[in-house]
Image 1: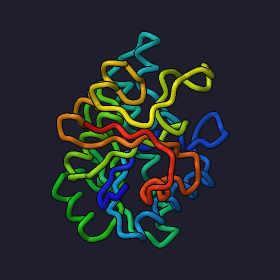
Image 2: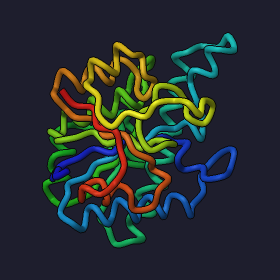
Image 3: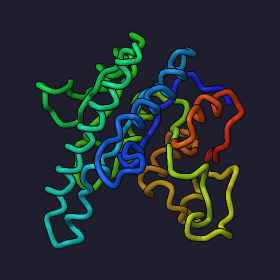
Length: 235
């Protein structure tokens, strides 16, 4: 599997490690090392990171609160995670920049497609924070959107398991694992690997989605070398 330009979508929960909340620095350092190894091979990589380890906006709505405010709070959580990941990359000697969909110039640059491409062309790892900048859209949708804007050849979705299953394999040991699917099959089967808007956007822009376990050290590099374990969603 040869890609020279990819976008990695990582959940905020991936940064927690075995903790129930927040950021495990050792885990962030390990994920950063995986990113650095791929970057060192000349692969252009950008990242969209979630904020579920800090705050989930949908939790506010489920308790009767305001969904818009909750989503804005969740966007701030993604900025915290992005800054942590940038710190870990810089420790490894990798130039990295955080671009936020919500303006906060004291902390990071504001997103524009032109700025993102300029940083990527300069060899920097680009980390996107703030989701799409709009409520009611998940960071999965942000991942598909930024992948399209960056001209990514594939969207890599780092998850808790090694691909897409017919059901949660941690709850259903009989769940079927898929090696390959089309975007339409993911939508038709209602497979809960990404939200509908994200899958549809990837399909419209003909972007393959590669679903793998982000918890396996070195797996991202192995998949790019054709040796790893993942589910490939492509039409």
